[in-house]
Amino acid sequence: MAEHRADGIQVFGVVPEITQLFNSRYRLTFRCELGDNEEAWYYDNKENIFAEFGTLMDAGYGHTPATPDPESTWPNQRLISHELQYIPQKDVQVLTFIYETLTSTWTKEQEDVRSSTVNGLRTLTRTQVAKIDTAAPYDEDDVGVATITDNGKTLYLAGFEDQSKADDQVQIGRFVTRWAEAGTLQTSKRNLSEGVVQVSTTFLAVEGSTVGPIISRSTQSVSGLKTITVTTLQDKNGNSIVDGGENLVNQYERKVDFTYPGVVTIRQDVLSSVAGIDPILFNYDLNPPVQGKVEAKVSVIFQTASEIVASDETYNDGSGPADSFWNPTEWARTYVSGIGWNYTAFSQTQGLRGYRVNPDVSQIITRDLVAGNVGLESRSGSDYNVIFINKSPSYIGKDSSSVDGSIFARVQGVSDNNGVEFTVNSRRLYASTPFVMEASGGPVDPSGNKYVLDLDLRPAFEDVDGNTYYKKTIITATV
Image (tube, rainbow, N blue to C red; front, side, top):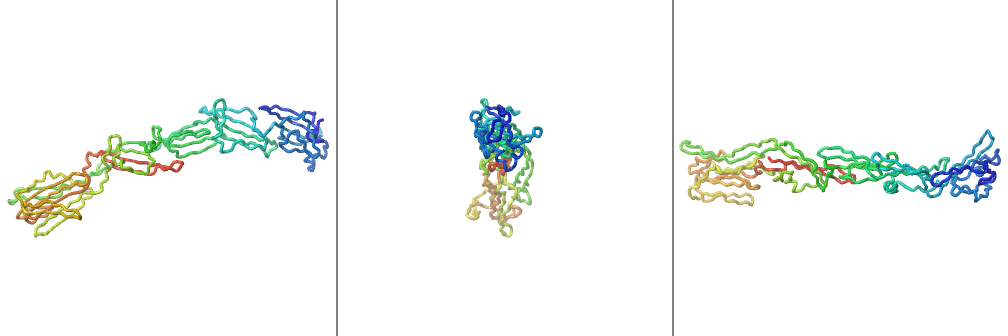
């Protein structure tokens, strides 16, 4: 029998068992007999029994290494398994050496295993072997980055498993990689409120392109393959929810409350043939506010900007721009001034919350007889206004404006010579004295105009990068 690697270790039958493996690799198995069956197995003799894993088949060991035979040496045969067995039937100890072709280069152990997903994307599993101490060919940073080409298709590294058996009886470096054709595995959609569609797309190996802000991203391993699920927000047409920075995602109609302002009008009553006198009474006629339902259009917009801009207040909902944003900042007020009986002066101002002014004074009967010497001036702060001059008793004048921002209606005059004809706001006037009665301020008549009734902007969501997106709701109506 021939010696194997050390003196006293004899190969049964002179030759080993040889197995041809995949990719021009080989496995050699040597079954050997120890020279001394009774004491060779002792612990103190272990260095003469067992060789180091990974050593070559022609590397001597022990106290008396054998001289290798170059003609019988197979290249790159490294020890992967080594054991001593006792066979009682033969009363013999068998020392087994198993070698495989292993180098510092990762080599395919078997043919690649190919398969495909339900979507027709190619997957491939590759098993490679090398010396037990060979560095791994890939790490986590290579997943989704490293590529191979398989029959014209580019496959990305989707996962790996280091199966090197450093602690087992079989000492071999084995590395299993899983490769996949990049593509979409699954897409699901869910309708949220206000025309928003949540789209979840699952990619294999590499994240593909998506539409809309990404609100979540998760990575999983399915059967050893890396998958990436990305969730985005889109409109019903598949556009980004903030397409172009601002996107109208939904419109619908609904009835909304609208309060029509009350109206204050200067009223003139003439009472005929009362004790030979035709009294003239000036009063404020109040029609109270009325709340009702109006047909409105609700526009829901998502945007990247955090500001409300001026154009929002004249928003065009598709049927033409609004005239303005309905948000009255002042209401009507009344002012009356004059001298009552017993020569008692009065001046009174009253605010009318929820009212506007009717500037129409066309029905007021005026009177301007002859020139006189009565006048009326008004001063308030830095304002100075000459209401009239050089008028005679029984004079009645009027003035008005319907311009937004300076709306008013006014009646002014001079009481009669006897002080019995004129009554202003329930006060009888002293003879031949001037008076003024005015209603001013408040919004324009909204009837028939189109307004933005409500304008709301608030944070809606954040994407995975921490960017905030906003939801803007605009309600428009012709009232």
